Image (cartoon, rainbow, N blue to C red):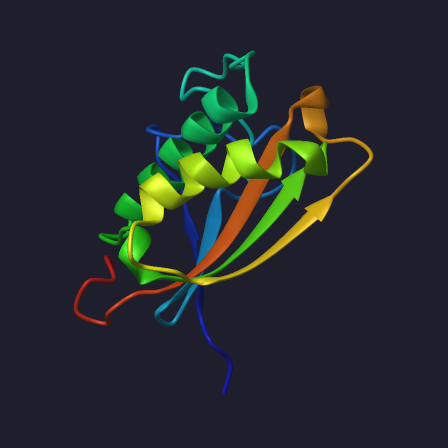
Length: 134
């Protein structure tokens, strides 16, 4: 049996800058593409790791909301940092968004990210079947 894929897109997050979707829904599992600190208008947020992390998480919240979900539905995140020395500053913002909800997470340092940003995050969320939008 093949699952149906639903492409998820919202104008509340930046449009994809390549041949990919903001997210894909399979059953009740939502898989986002990596989000970088672009505003919904496509403008790059230049600034500290904290400022960029705020924008990335704002984008991810918008993609989740497009399917009636929120950060409490997240089961796994993958974080790409340009500089692991900024981990503590990144983590302070990340923790503020997730609160007591602590999904599984991987964090890796990478040589370079799109548009030379400091952070990129992708996530997987399990959405209640009643919440999934048709």
